[in-house]
Length: 382
Image 1: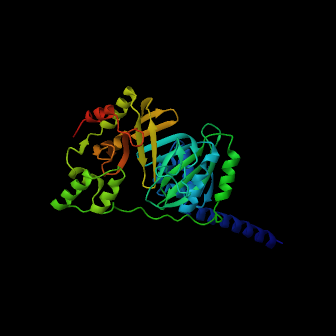
Image 2: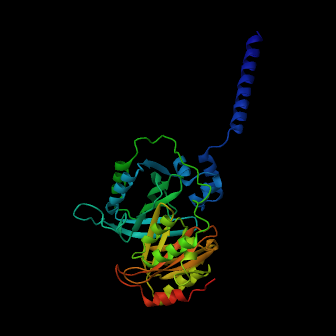
């Protein structure tokens, strides 16, 4: 008579033991990326995904693909698909385009004008990926992945964006829908470029351990060739090709071309230049690149402010954010062109990575202003 009760008790003990072992097994199982992000997000709700990914030891694209507080749809990401997608941007109305590197962020809002084409259907040189207020240029790095992202915004509204990453999973460019009238157009565009395989694991390549090697000790003949070629430049875009031909880094060339053509300036020059441009109403061009995309702003600076470690400059539909401590030094560079000298002011971090570049805004084929040249000449040299 007692046997069934004993069997019942043993069965119950067995279930409890199984449950205990299962719980122990779960405790020994490493949390998923989504779980780790959720914990980090709860602890630091204002942490930017780029910084969160770094803390979690993954790329931003991998974090996005894990999906937690957002819905991420994989898009086709080969060059032809990306080019085609960008040509549809005028259909979205007002957007906000964001390009950044680790230490500088450029945000520009506005509508995209259709790309101008010649009679053969080719894009007119200088128009880049988009037109109008949004001025973009493809970089040399190959893009690796793309997503359409829908998530709750901080203001309570739903945020819709197109986000593009390189082969290492680092953000190349982001486009946010900045209106409520074109949500259906956004969803149609996502459906048109949606990747057929949404379940495949995102593959990213490890970041390179060092910068590409350059020749360390150019000969006197190399220096003479550099200086001669420099004087023969007819367009600012010829400089990168000259560097490749001579196998020199950008800063190596700036150190060698002569003090009349380039000179080094201190890190404080960035804020001095922007403040001077604001007070003098000097229109400027701001270039921010990350290897995969270059975004350009042309216009005035209306306001500046410091918020924590960031120095901010803004105007209507434009914001520039610079991590002040990252600016290690800069260069003033005077390039010969068919239309006279064009002067740029470039800023670098301690590792020699270019972070942001400034020019005087000018119409194509027109000289830069004398005011710009005086402003640049007054920057503190080192």
